[in-house]
View 1 (cartoon, rainbow, N blue to C red):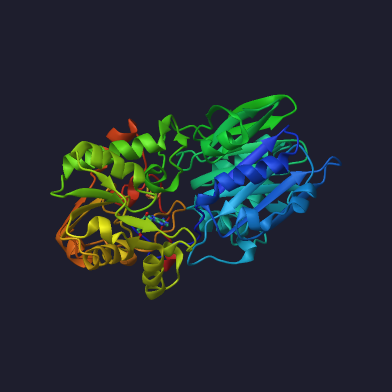
View 2 (view 1 turned 45 degrees about the vertical axis):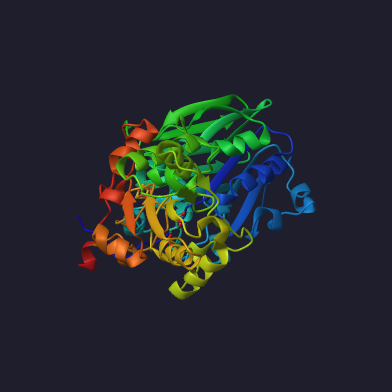
Length: 464
Ligand code: AMP
Ligand code: SF4
């Protein structure tokens, strides 16, 4: 299969939507904060005010920085959508912060999405061939544009969104707000999570169930792959833009992205991670005195590993939570400094000990290499790295920004070469099979581990 060298948009984000909820913006403010781990670069909210006008506020920064009490008061209304955006190395800029508000494309409507459309270029060309002047660059604008262009063919929102969603291939969990309704849909493969809950007499949709818990909503169900929910005065109405029977939930949601207290399609994220730690121990036991996690994302997996190996789980590494995430630093040297500032070994715990370090994943290898070095400097006599996911060797085209193939440590390298690079005494990765076992699922997207992309990747013939 043709694998393009670079990817375009990177949109690992979080979305929320409210309908029929008093002080919707206040609830969205709380819900977005509980989705903050999905995106820290920027955030925004759009509400429908009592006169039917859509109001929007968005900016760069964390949710608590962007919205003051006054800002929230200036967003009245009982329906709202919100978004948190992930900071990426390639696509920055204020203009990418969502939701987007469209007043001409059949609007007004606001739209926010999480994911990445793989046939964006093809759809743009198709529209251009039909004589549409198309200048947008983002997937959300493409979605909105498609909704706008169907105005003549389809006379209601549900039909318009259905047609637009049907033309798009790839990953999307999208919320759309009009003066009279909230729409929520997932792509036909179901890459990104989206749950529906009840809040008083109204409704909430959110990327993760932890947002439902935060606002005191009751989980109803997950939005299905290919499903479109219309939520309005009449309640919740379900329809389909595509029906494939696929449930290709992103395995990295379970492994790294989602919050451990979230439940994704019936599987608790913490339970998944803990079980993956147990399975990792069964597949790759470590001759160690203690187990430590790399705080906090691998905590649950380390618990499982320690439990299965009957070794103590210790706080061998601590994290400075006030340092920005290392992964996103634009250059490799900045990333390395970032890891050192963020993670420190606890000398009194690791000195003279053989340490099993459990991390959730190795992407570029920056974190693992520095960790091994730090632990040795702190006196660890052996460092055994155990990774609660398979080797990450293929780029993601569905919205997870992990770099191109040449940046992925496991791409084209043997286990020994990876172990030598990070300098560990031993290295063990979880198998793809174990991901299925830990989740109890029969379908997952595991493309970044095995190259089995669930979609076409849309080779660009004129690039060849
Ligand atoms: P690296 O240092 O590049 O090998 O990154 C691996 C570390 O980043 C692991 O400790 C993960 O917890 C974390 N990680 C994995 N995938 C991502 C991602 N897509 N974005 C940000 N951090 C990630
Ligand atoms: Fe998730 Fe990997 Fe699939 Fe991307 S390729 S959607 S990161 S499992």
